Amino acid sequence: MPIELEIKLIPAHAFDEQKIKEAVLRYEPQLQGTIGPIQIIKRSIDARKKPVVYVLRLKVYESNEPIESTTNLFEIKPQGFSKKVAIIGCGPAGIFAAFQLLERGIQPILIERGKKVKERRRDLAALNKELIVNPESNYCFGEGGAGTYSDGKLYTRSKKRGSVDRVLQTFVQYGANPDILIEAHPHIGTNKLPHIIENMRESILAKGGEIHFDTKLTDIKLLDGEIKSIICNHNIELPVSAVILATGHSARDIFHLLDNKKILIEAKPFAMGVRIEHPQHIIDTIQYKQNKRDENLPPAAYSIVTQAEGCGVFSFCMCPGGIIAPAATDIHETVVNGWSPSKRNGAFANSGFVVTVEPKHWQAQFGNSDLSALAFQQNIEHKAFESTGSIIAPAQRVEDFIQNKMSTTLPDCSYIPGIQSVEMKQILPDFIVKAMRTGLTHFGKTMHGYRSSEALLVGVESRTSSPVRIPRDKEFLHHPEIKNLFPCGEGAGYAGGIVSAAIDGMVCANAVRD
Image (tube, rainbow, N blue to C red):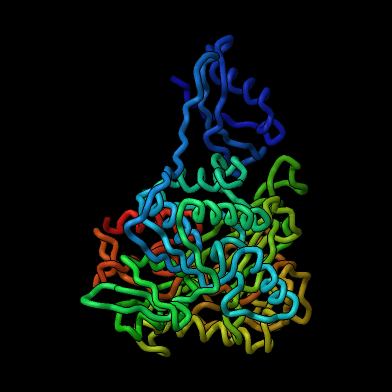
């Protein structure tokens, strides 16, 4: 049996097999002469004290002992299909639902309103350079979903409902760096993920699945409490046995469709704020406590949370060495998100900096309907657009924001469409502004240097999660009113990120009746 061991190494030694072996023998000298393969199970960074070290969790084998295999991939055999299930949305929830259905011998029919990953690039170029928003093809809509062109972060706390390892191993199977299996905060990168998604698409098609791009769910036909068929593009009718609804958090037309059909949905809390951007070297200095980052350390990340003015204030989707990107899905709205390439080698670090939004915050202005939280969200996005007249983003220096004054100058920013000086209090509600000011003051004390004159707020970060929940039965996972409708992933309110959405896709696929 292998020995499980945790060791600490300086960055220069953490990727050197000989140094790792020497460290193992220092920890376990009785292994001298019998030590065999060393398997890294998890690799993380401990920057709490000087010097910064890597923490490696290892399995150490004896010289003649084979390494244990932990592969957990989908097993799909060629077969005929007696049942078809529509999956609405080709993001991680939809893709992994398709794999799970194929393993069960059920044919997945993936319906995606957007385009294939390569074709999306032209629309993203027009968005960034010409400020043109294509409502059906953008950073949120298209093959692979929002995660494809917004970073590919794979960290999740959702480990009880399904197999994180299976998700990560599947990504590796289709081209991801195997390091994602051992990194504490795995990340693929926006430059790498599109090709992986293409490989996954080709596999689904080769195994008998169908994928229809530029195809939008526009209606559903019900009979006796079940979906009998779906209508796509207003005139294409597809009979289905069940529907997995995995449309993501920005498919607002789906929420309106369900509401119009009198299918139960619910307004739910979410979070809203801005992107905060620093030069990456500032975050490196804060986190690593070094004037210059060690070349063996990655660009530093952070995660912060506090309570302020009765609200949660926290960082979200932190992107070391990344850029801020336009995430609008319709005209006359400004939305920002962040992403990083695989090397995370950009000059800036950005993160969502957001405040929790509860029913009390939207009900006074927008009532308590099922779509009232969505109306609150849209209202802020329209204000952000109106503040500059385009998707050029409103921006304000952090110090100016705290001191309640207009920024007369703005630092360089990674947001390609451009930024314009606007006071965030013109866009965001008072409770968010007050909570952000208190939170920034607090973080400036706990992370010395975070409240920097070079730090910038860019608005608005409003798509942290869905403002609508589509309810489902806790045991059978179908909608409480419609027995063959399975709300799934971020858009339904049951996931938050690539891995948790993928897990939820598999869970919902397993819940479909044979």
